[in-house]
Image 1 (cartoon, rainbow, N blue to C red):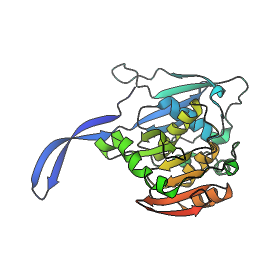
Image 2: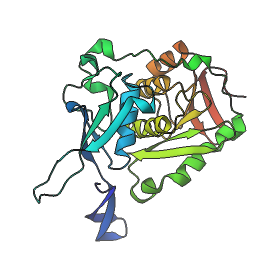
Image 3: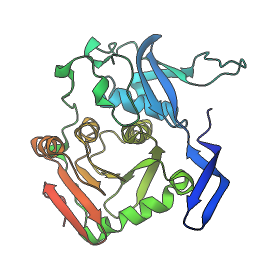
Image 4: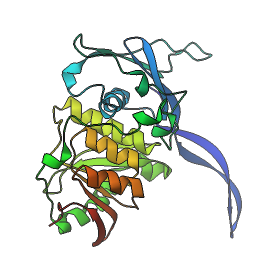
Length: 272
């Protein structure tokens, strides 16, 4: 497994002087995702929870919908100049009754750490239809409980605390319990890792949970939640216009600017 953090020397400039010191950086490495030996996508990610990331990616692309849809996940030989395995190529074998991904799922070259949808091979593949309708959920949460979750998330962001360079996503229940937290240099990867955990725990469709984002709510992150059946998304920062439109179309509750005791509810009736 690759390193989650990397130590590098830096030159620190302050009003009090100039000195050199070591700094901790969030690691960023490519991960090639293959399906039954066929390359599907390359994403820039923080190493760790790669199997969850790949499962979540396939779930969010509509390729799989249950843990049983993948029968094997294994790292392929991918060596560096020293002959060591980089663990940067992961192959997932689908069950016999699961069709291979449509060509529209394939990425042109790679997805960056800031954008996962920008590598789509076809524009008409951007908006996907979920097999788990979020609008069927009756999930609600008290606003006081919700307002406490960003601080709870920050306490769980261990790598962010040492690097300041990672996004985070969490799955939470109506009583404010954080079921799982995942971090990554890419916000879409953090959500894919979380959805992969959810899938492997047989919690999909996740209609009895909400999704908490440490940053903004983009169209793609709302779409990923939609594909898992999640009906409530709360983000510390702003949503985009298309994210709000997609949430409204799917009967979801979308909260932005969740800071302290204040928040903006853009769509839905899931806040009490």
